[in-house]
Length: 230
Image (tube, rainbow, N blue to C red; front, side, top):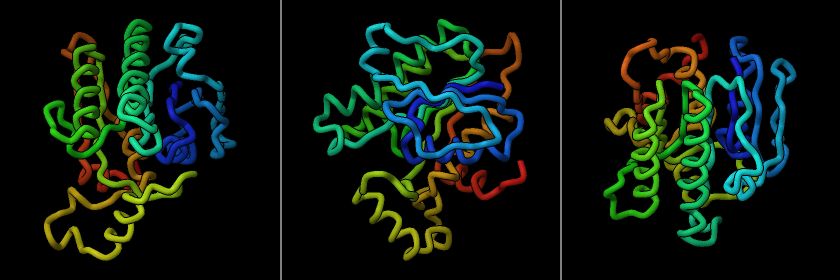
């Protein structure tokens, strides 16, 4: 099984690469990134292709043949992007371009990280953009579309995200499970990465069956992420 990973230098993308040692079914990973990822895995062949998504946008690069699934871990914040327009380019335009090309290549599975609260009708710009990309991906009718909606992420990043640091602090301070708020508990990026791989290995569309869209909410990501036995 060969996957294409978009966003291999981010929190979840790096965790995908680190987690592959547990899953011998995955034989090769092609990583598209602006810079070489710091994470690697001696047990799985990893090919890093330095891609500027501006080039992808104008057709200078394309998804290779023989890919079984695309993992889209692209994502930023409005502060880091610098504007709402740039944020939407990274979190909406690029994933949609990749998805359309993957559909043309007849790749059976597309797996994307969005966010808890994704809603195309949301008054919150961030949640609205995440909901809009989910809506557009549904229209492409992949045999399998996996949507992963984590709460605030916990883990080491190259840049500091204040909101996530606050979420990490609250995650240690507040007993979310005891309060019935497990769905909202900040989650390690590792758990989200493992949930994506779990879905790849277990959510198998049947030939001739209608396209499947499966949404993994935060509480389910927690349950899968804690289980290393699958």
